[in-house]
Length: 125
Image 1: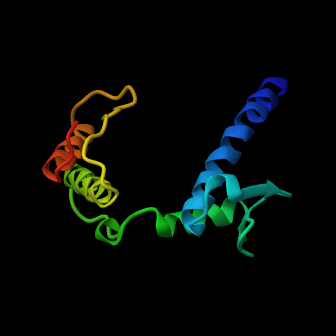
Image 2: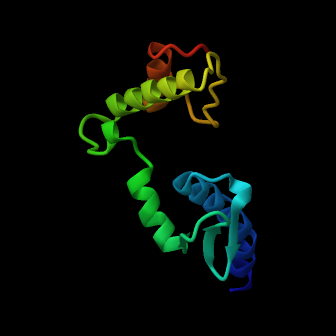
């Protein structure tokens, strides 16, 4: 039991960091404006706050753009749409070139489909 406690203790700071990023995205704040205390995430400029379960439920409704909400279609087709949406967002932010980090995953299947969609959307790798 002692080993599992150590693993959990090491994982908590990373969970809190990711929770702050998610809360910031949902509330439209900067991650450094998000505070975590008493098991709740809150932003300094708003009265909204989330615990981990509420954050997960809220993130599920905000995470995907409306074009992908239904989840219909093949996984590769959806991945390609994600690539196109990323390209569109980058163009809106005036970003023309990016680095595609596949994070150790092999470059095939859905990973390749995301890259292909981004290229079709106008991004340069």
